Image 1 (cartoon, one colour):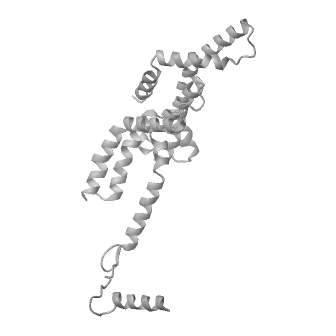
Image 2 (cartoon, helix red, strand yellow; image 1 turned 90 degrees about the vertical axis):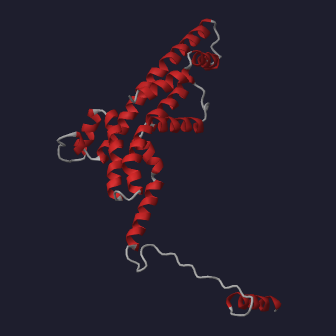
Image 3 (cartoon, rainbow, N blue to C red; image 1 turned 180 degrees about the vertical axis):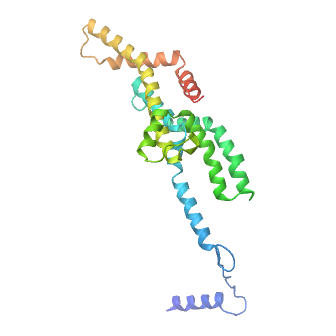
Length: 246
């Protein structure tokens, strides 16, 4: 049994006190003070932080301009009729970076008013969270419709707010989202009109020529792409989306 004897010798050399042996140091990792006080509170804070990080993609979708941009670009692709061109990855990436561009002033305020004071221990985490929510609320309130906001205030069964600052954030978020969806569909409808007219013209020409078996989309698609390129469609649409946020 030479394997077992070799293992015993190795263990003796590492853990024993014989000459030339290498001792393994004990490593203890503790959360909180040396006496263990505050460890539970810090652990709970870490769990909350991990939960927030896991919900970060949903938060980006809910409280930023991402919803409007992504829906408009998806409707644009359907209006042109290019099916999966551009791919979903391209549309999502473009929507995400345009969102970062639009939300840059909001992130700057959060960094200067909440994050940096918290990192320098000037304010506690609770105050930092309250300060960080303020710029996001102001952004959403600029875009939300009063009708949508009133709907969720009525459904939430809360007391009638005296002013807009009394409206809870959990009421503003869904109202903001449906307002964004309506605005996105309005923009999408306007995008559909020129391409729909082009489809109707091509279909009428094909019918007059007796080419009933040829799908109009086969002929109209190149013309729609050419029209989109000639009018510099990406410049117009992206510029209009960004300007729609004021």
